Length: 360
Image (cartoon, rainbow, N blue to C red):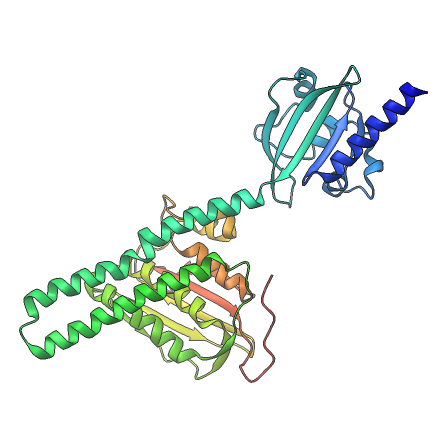
């Protein structure tokens, strides 16, 4: 009786431990049959209750998690020894987030038991993205206005004798300093983009385009590129203007950087109905390769700051802004097959109508 009570107490303790773990966890016997599982494990393997997993083959359950290369779970679990380092591998359940699987052998009541935990890697991936975005912000977004300020100061040394010219250069310098400050404040908003709701306010679309173009004029002049906007519809839409202006700034900056001298970059807007707003940046550069189009089609997963093929700098932020507005970023060749056409599609109701809730 005392031995039975000890076993029951041990099982109750293990049950409580598994229930308290912040990730999916399962305990199996030496042959790989599940003895205990917690609710996170039940959700992961689509069981109604944890007890529904009892008696199932652990290796077969783990085959539902895709690994590269495919893991031989039966062989892996058979080689685990109590006290040895746990086996760990990253995996993915189709249609779900990345996870990391830890498998270890433990000795309990003189018997070998298998303990497997499956932890969501979403927080880790989010931390990695934040680090990459911080590097991209310093090396890309913030560098542009600072470089423009240096150019303006160099011009002031050579052209500043004329008071009118000096005043013009000072005004441009002040504009770029303000832009650098706005970008810094915008980066803080970007870092909190998924944590805070959008601040939708009525915005005149033409004024929005004019602001985005004005922010990039110095860079366009330095690159010998003509930058302008088409008037577009005289409409007012409900959107988060600072986020959208920065998204357009990223698109314009990329277009300017990839455009030959003497060519033009244009920003235009279309309003096909009362909800959709299309903001399009068109250039006459080399356009996007098939691999780059494929990356954009994959969404955030396909974009990384400092991407070697050149589509990751700033475009990830553009996509996230579009998604928060219930839209998307669409890339296509120019009308005659030359250059790139980047359209920021947004769900932006008329300001006079009901403001749509932020996209999840």
